[in-house]
Image (cartoon, rainbow, N blue to C red; front, side, top):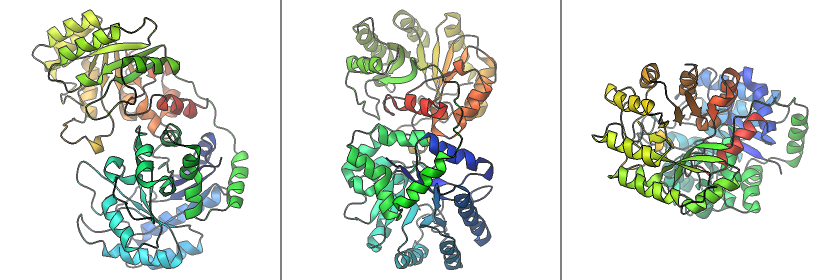
Length: 511
């Protein structure tokens, strides 16, 4: 089946071939792209910047040999936007892209957008509009899916797509009721479990389109949202191809030409495949803010075995925000001990380095567990705080390995009422400079952090690679520079489906 990716961005010219080869690797037939700027993405582009961006998009599509089509990027606040749109139409654009220059400041009127939507309706052009739901304030000019819904209600005959489904898709549910002209794409953000199922239940398959947001996001991580969703093949076909084909009027002839162009490309080389029989980023049971798809440790253990895992390092989700961490870890140890000896599940003790009784916590953990889990992110303490140094020294002296959680889910969409703390690059570097020799696995490290950790050349420091899988080329670069044995599989279950990152790892290394 053909796949149409209707939300991508034009990369620098040096990556144009890479873009098409990544499409080929992930079996994407045709992509729609827009350019938001040459060297950077100005939030309120002037006429010159807009002309340069759209010229770049048109050139990229010519270069692609039919594998790409493009959308005209328009700034409604520019007085000459009509002239820019006319020029883009003459150059073959397939629709309109609106980003965040929709008003000068938050909560201001969106009246400038109305004229663009009226023109789109007259020209029968679909309009893709960036929408976002942040925990913090929206960017100036940015709109939510609720505001998108209001626009869609004012132009019921215009086909409009809310990009990212607000990204925090949980707050998109119910917003587009009674608006058959309003679609969403599922591009951007991490491949969170349950996203597509929730949107299918809310909107139906006919109003959802696949998009990746590449190259900022990887094709594999975004396709995983569809491939791992519990839905029918008919629903997948609508999301992956048929809806975009209908809305953007893409012919089978164009798809055939795209396939022929892809067939002429040299395949990307295979990369060293990090070891996949161990998983280093799993929560057993429910998290306080995410229900697990599998109920009970026995079901999780069986699923881990079915996934071919020999060992899966698991933290008890109930212990993450428990008032009595020691009690929860005791319950977890007892439950894990009742599993068959063949279970891959390897329980980790949740530890609080800043607790007054951290020594007692560590002593108990050493009796019942083979390692510990700490989270400066969720539990809001500094990794380089000298008050934690004694804790890390005691773990190292006891030969007690630690899994250090730097990040979970997406900082931009923090659960209401929680208070996670972003770990800074400076404190990570401070910790790396003083960490005693031991055994450490870092969870949720982004590319810059992985680079810092692995550049130490310390064999006792390793990283699971979930965040490297989310962006295009990140894993490739790290595998080209560092020992693959120091990059580990991590699922981030239940926030992601259990097999999601293993799939992404294989696709991005060419296996």
